[in-house]
Amino acid sequence: MNILSLFGRRGESASVAKNRLQILLAHERADDGSDAVLISSLREDILAVVAKRVNIDPDSVRLEMDRSGEVTTLGIDIELPPTARAS
Amino acid sequence: MSNATVVVVTSGKGGVGKTTSAAAIASALAKEGYQVCAIDFDVGLRNLDLIMGAERRVVFDLVNVVRGEASIKQALVRDKKLNNLYLLPASQTRDKDALTDEGVASVIEELRMYFDWVICDSPAGIERGATLAMRYADEAIIVSNPEVSSVRDCDRIIGLLDAKTKVAEEGGRMPKHLLITRYDTERAKTGDMLATDDVVDILSVPLIGVVPESKDVLKASNVGLPVTLSDETSTAARAYTEATRRLLGENIPVTIPEEKRGLLGKFFKGRAA
Image (tube, rainbow over the protein chains, first blue to last red):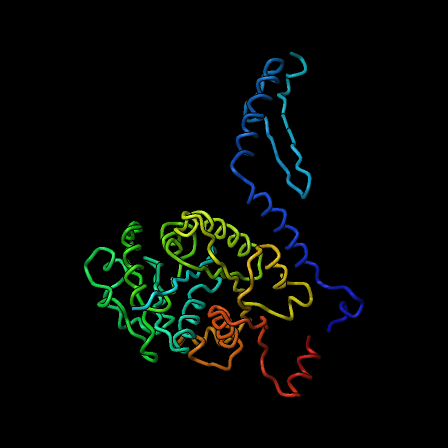
């Protein structure tokens, strides 16, 4: 028994591990590759819309999916060239 | 003529204790009097022969048998202590396509006639060796450490067991048993290690045993004896023996064997923890 456990503080890394695994595996078990297909189609669509107005490098469009428990969020990050606002 | 139960010992991740467990359980079954054959499926990186202390007596191997270069009976290596325990070694060939589905099917079918239990020691990964090791199994023992990457890989393996095995393809459901190895009761108690209940919860596979981290496992492998034969009183050997009894269908509660200590040892252990 160490000083910390006297004050009721226990290691918490195991419950963090359990939580992370449960979220990850819920997604992996359901994963049929459709996420990847969705992301790449969305990326193409977004790129086409933006390219109508701004000349951008295709690599400057980044999509990120964040799965955390019940909610999945989609982050879109588009880097505009320095001259974009002038055009 | 017997009709063996074929059990695959698998995990996905390497280094979690598949070979140690396969050797320990095969030996424990043989000690109960059953005719047992352990097969090493780790072609190119065989080690079950070393753990069972049979490395100097290997002549033919699984690939020789699959290719028809040797008969099964020629290739089987009899254990030096138990005359009802046999090993079918893997080959050391670098050709990873050396095993064929049909070849393995006919080897397993023949072994079913000679033995009561056939224990397939799977290689790590999800490549051909691993999928063929599980392909014709009747039951699976899934070996996991209480650690995130090991648990995740077990989940992948469970998916394969339910999809890529003969039992699954015929519409059945392969019975699975979870074996947690390298467990540290103290660390689980303080919340620094996934507890057995956590792993069972996540994987939803019934527990067949919990093998505590034990110095005796390394000692046993040093001398080439399965841990259930080298020191029957060690915590690991007791855990494997209990797991084996559950595999045989005995309904005994899962316990985590502890080191036997004197009063003084208990006192100091309590202080140190």
